[in-house]
Image 1: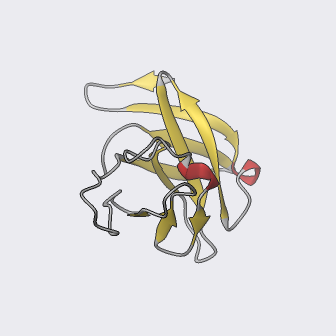
Image 2 (image 1 turned 90 degrees about the vertical axis):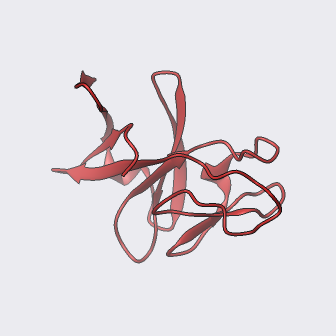
Length: 111
């Protein structure tokens, strides 16, 4: 783990441990983080817990832009963590995720 004044970056192992079209949960320090690899490409990371009832977002249905909580179908954008399903549900934190030579790196700083 490396740290600066504003960011904490963590190497989480091979990118391939997150299958294309799915998400996986990780614990980064004390923060639960869900990393997604949509079929459109790229990597995205969000706080792994739905603010509505604590649903596991890494297990949610994924498309190219949103993930849907498996418990009550609240949807969050992969790029910003914004809740787009309404109902007064808070947004989730979005983090930076990247592939560095085949290794998954997550930074706990809002993009």
